[in-house]
Length: 333
Ligand SMILES: Nc1ncnc2c1ncn2[C@@H]1O[C@H](COP(=O)(O)OP(=O)(O)OP(=O)(O)O)[C@@H](O)[C@H]1O
Ligand SMILES: [Mg+2]
Image (cartoon, rainbow, N blue to C red; front, top):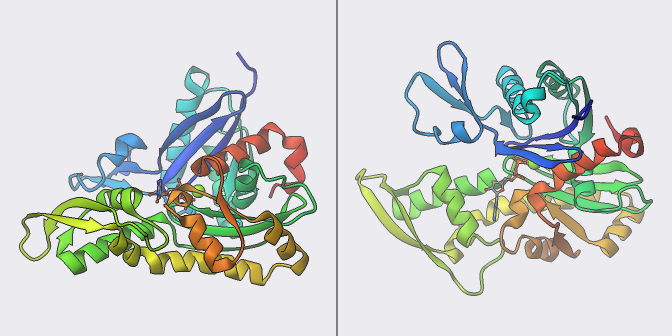
């Protein structure tokens, strides 16, 4: 048995992950907690809590404790972290691990302190913080320590963050509270307005993943969607196609493209020149949206490509950072 253990944690708006040095990814669960409405007692966490979404009685409240990449409910987040740590540590939970945890580059001092305190009181012996874009870049395999500008754009469920990295640090960054969730909501709104069809978030996400496209699709794909009529309240089935889904989400996507533009605007010209050479790297779950890189290349005029396993870049990079603490110590918060 190892005498001390080192973990990396990514508390995402939609998914939380834990990585252990020497083992790799050891936990990947939805960032959802079910608590008792009256006594605030934790009833279920992660996958177990997710199945209760939209289906729970009055005495159970199902919460997403992280919003826009930061802690929205401190107590619930701390309890969730404790649950994750216990689960990962197994019978050795009494051995308090060293933890590296990532935070968005734009967090305030107060938000940053909250993450640190929650991690420590959840059972970590020591806690380090790393900028999320830096972690994403490390996880995407970008040589972050070189004197060369690289741009990473992470688009998750709740937020999008663009950053330019050089010499192991974040030089410029911009973020916006727009992510995959907003795409789902745009699809829900479209279906209600055009077809009088009400669907849940899960169905909207399913439509986005199956036929969503970031640029106008050349060949349209169709899909049958089940829901309820808003006017009559009865079950209803509608066939939607990818062109109309593209129309429904394009404005939200425009907001994400905008933060890339704004980041480049404040970036020193030498680094912009580097980025024109190396291209823009995309990470986060939403980077998997069909043709997302095409949209960015077209709008920004710089090549863009999706990192390998984009949804795992941040956790992998955070894991690499704690594994090589000496190399990255200077870059930590
Ligand atoms: N194939 C896919 N196509 C489009 N979107 C996808 C796909 N797979 C997952 N997503 C979306 O990715 C998002 C989750 O991404 P990710 O796990 O990176 O978010 P997060 O880290 O929890 O959130 P954040 O970084 O904003 O706090 C969800 O909105 C999900 O619908
Ligand atoms: Mg994320």
